Length: 313
Ligand SMILES: [Zn+2]
Image 1 (cartoon, protein in one colour):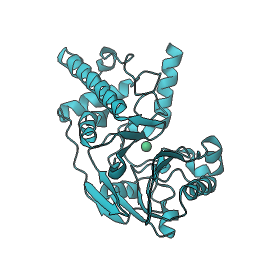
Image 2 (cartoon, helix red, strand yellow):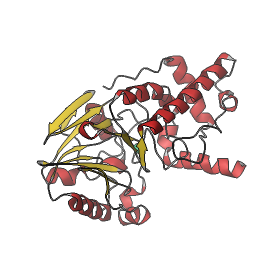
Image 3 (cartoon, protein in one colour):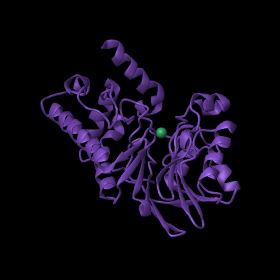
Image 4 (cartoon, rainbow, N blue to C red):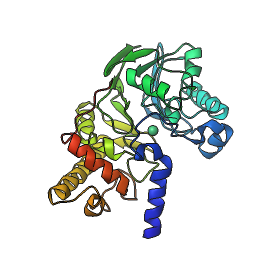
């Protein structure tokens, strides 16, 4: 058990180091991305999978991407890790869906595995629409040299109507980064939750600082009229999966608050909250947040007991 737990902690620590340390800023979470060919070999772009008529997703190469086809062109959510091999395979999959050009691109957050081929689509006539704060984090973080920053910016909400399709983008709060964008393919009833849920990890990959906002974000997500959701990695989710994920978070936060009421301190909170019966949808490994996470969560709950989102500046 100890070995398993160590493995889980290493997974969290390795992939979400910057986030676990409380710095919810732009990071090349893909990590392997800069190595190009190696990234593709380790995590090749998968064959496009149809979700519904005129709606597809393309897995891996960093993260899930979504493509909606309209008679006037394509709308794309997230553009994968850098690297020529990934770009070639990604473009080939998109062209296998439709010969029409990508006209609009949305990014779910400023991590390298979600933004790195924006420039290709800009060069081929696309407009990148993004949260103002996404651009700011991108410019202030280690991705500043990555081209393809959004050119059409919005504060909190954006509504694109194009080719008979409607796609909304919303900032509902900071869960995985301070620029998390929920991309809602409204006409198709599909929502991109991105790394608010991430199947690559046995925990949702959320810092203690930001965890306090997650229940409120999920409330807002569940007000959207969707029947299908997609995480940053892994298979499609149903609405029931997202509801179950929300219930798990509610259980967890209730336990945390009860433990604090019962006298848990910043130092002891981790040992006073049961996690080994909490699972993200579809995952076999239980949640295993570490002591640093709980220490951050303790402070965050003191500062923000109701979990209101910070203002996206
Ligand atoms: Zn991420």
